[in-house]
Length: 447
Image 1 (cartoon, rainbow, N blue to C red):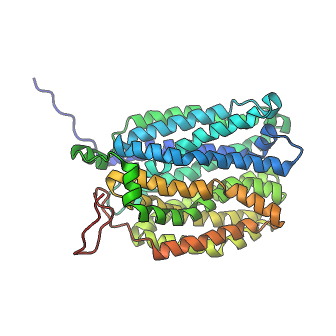
Image 2 (tube, rainbow, N blue to C red):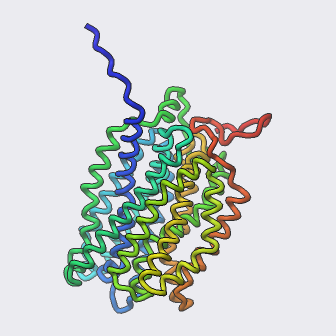
Image 3 (cartoon, rainbow, N blue to C red):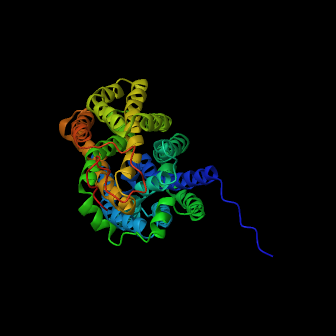
């Protein structure tokens, strides 16, 4: 008796599963940054000598930025892995590495216990986290996009920036709960560890869901055609240099804007503007909620009008808005909420078009490698260093508006890059084997 073949899976059910598995895994990845930012002031006192508060905070942000040093290695490793072995297997590895390293941060002994070895161990674990993150964001973006229906790519892919925002909300919300309910001795003794220890169960959930999803139709098509790139990293650099440079050029504003808004703002409000830690945490929760809510709407606009118009709107917005936003933060709690939320909306607009654009820019066989190089380089050089640079600028200039001026200056560069170098990608097929589609009569560049 012949067995009846199983009916094909409902595409809508498959897409929902893809979005859920990518979203939860991405949530775990970015919960790390939120947890570190939330506890930055406490970490400064637990892992460094406290005789100079500014120096301790700068050292804490230096370790935060140091974690980004490993991102290029992660981008190279996971990008190559994703192009050669598959998007899904790559994402399973990233979530496992991230959740394990974050959990171990929660178990670290402090400076008072083991001296200088404490910040060294913290730095090493941050490097593991950075290595993992080097492939996560772009990998999750490609995974969702390669399942998304035509005309709704950005809307589907908005799950990636939305879960980044929700991870920050969860981290900030937990930080607000801990700082408002625990005594200072309890927070410094064991309370700061809680956000990091939660990474273990969350990581196991993400790993389980990702293991149950088949790889993307685009990658399976490459396998059927035996068209898997053998040297995707080298080929991406050689054939997609213009796309990598363009992606870097506008992603630097995305990177600085995001990390000033999400990671730096809590310490900035409490250390520089004199707000209580609870007020700083609550402000961060509100701004990240605004970011998460705006992302799907901005993504829908990107699907309708194109990536380039939305990128231009966001970059131009960053040229004029940061200084008023940082000024508002000085006027009182309500002004701080409005100022940080203004930055959050701009980050949502640029991020919601950046996700589909960074996937669409590259041909299928070089996508994971090419997108990881350009995007990760921007976040290594500008994103991870943003809190450190902002803290140093405030200290050097004595002006609390200095971070806003810094962001505005970078945004001028990104605006010019989008205006002069970015080519609309919304119409490009994701399964193509050329670097880009050329006008009629022009020979396409093969990948």
